[in-house]
Image (cartoon, rainbow, N blue to C red; front, side, top):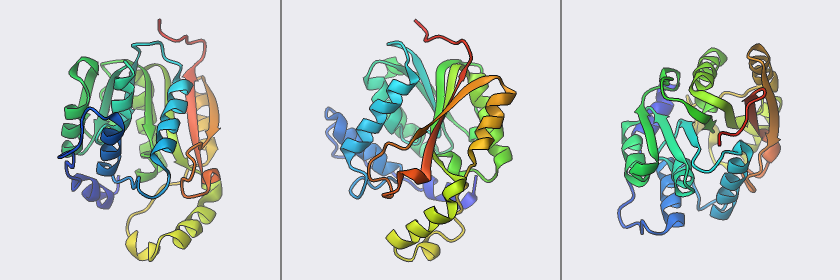
Length: 244
């Protein structure tokens, strides 16, 4: 993980003051902002919530199932899963963000929160599904990413997913698009690299571990205006069934 990205996220602050904690939309928006996601631009809050519903459907977990997020940040995604009755867990290397997640996720729904690097994911406690959203782009190289995938698989009883993957086939188009919509992009993001992935990277991992694999389009309306730049990857142990 780039030290420059790490400095940015470790500087995130708790901005829950004044938030109506009984209003789940307001809490969710606040958590996304703490994570550095500008929900005042695009996509809309409704689009983000619809994306969550699509993701939840893709995991096909039984009510009360267990789901873990690598790179959970302040817990925006886990907050929604917990609200829907799932047992949740998460990992992030920012102690500040982990503390915020602990504040907003009900204790009865919280199985595990870990402050550590993604490749230090503990695997003793098992979850039905383990996923990461938008985090793999910030890894330094494919070797690190593969180590994280190995840990995710060890922690999962059934499936793993990597969401919001930057598509290697569209790297140049994606970067040019960002330069068009973000003023002084190259200056602002100097020394803040992002890693793009060919689909074969995940296909090879799935083949080595005898996993079924499927890719899905980014269904987040308005995300940089070009959903073809980003894809989701779902992998599952063959023959696994939803935990009842």
